Image 1 (cartoon, rainbow, N blue to C red):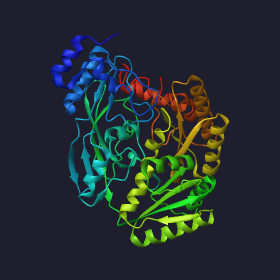
Image 2: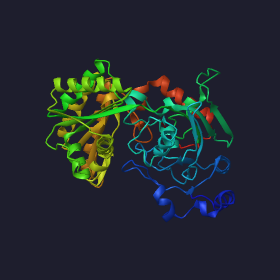
Image 3: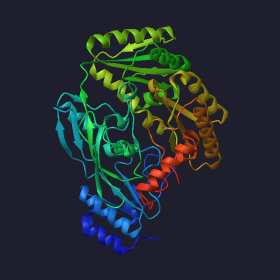
Image 4: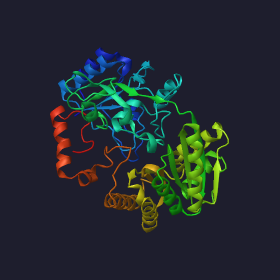
Length: 460
């Protein structure tokens, strides 16, 4: 049933008419995220400016039994912020202020609409460092990063968003405001409630403020490119680097199809005749950086690298990292529909997994480019397809199912950094087991008994 005009009136009274969208042609851009083929127009879209306005919007929605879906830039890749029918979308991009930088305590407090890049750039002004760096960091918002527990290229050494969240302010489904966590390094008082909200994908409440942990900025960094004729050799190199107890900040993998697409897109001189590339980066104390760079180069050579290229300066290092970050965009130029998968396997299984993905692509006659954060076992097999071709899409879904099943058989996870959303729901119970799966649903029912917060995501 369409939302009533009375609800629109209450929202306009709270936010002002210019911050409430109700016409289908205006709400249409908020009907999808970065996930192909998943879309649904909302009933209305609102743009609150602060926590109190968020709380009032949630109270209005709860009073009328209207589902609430919160979002930022919409760069998610699991359908986590795709609306449900006749819901209220809370778009938080107006809440884009850095509220406090506290160098004495190595923390930074922000509103959810601040971009991830701005978080790190602000930290850098004080000689500090915010490590999580999703590929979309120029436009993705920190609130979405927390909601999806995003990762990034530096996840191998520095972990994911959860590892840097010290506190949250959250609007609960009844409109009350809870503050969870604090700036203390050690705090063991009661349940760690902030951790329940990190990665909850907006199903438990709306994140309105975030306290982040920062690190000292690394003194040195070295970036290298290793070129392989066989992608299995690249995978085995990654396993060997980890086995020799080296933890670089970045070990990124691009298969041949991805390399060709990136070079066609970025024109930076990548070897398009190779089988795979590894982007390797180490950071930290200058002496350690030099030693690790030499050792990683030696390991790559022993595993078949035909060329090891070291970035001459920061500009070239940035160029190589940008090439990796453009992989998704470069692949997306090939076909009308791009489906970016997100699976993670134990690092000792990487060579087997990349070979399996290539075999699945051939078996189902599909274009699949694979890249990812190979150092932490996180692969992104990317299907280049056309959602208008029903027969091809059926083959895509069959291939996806087989890749996920293989991932679970290897002891992996159905998502390393994109979240469950709508895309990964079919496999969640199998990965978690019945008891853990039902425990998550118990949390949801306890905090959101009416089921209005982002319904249908993670589980039904």
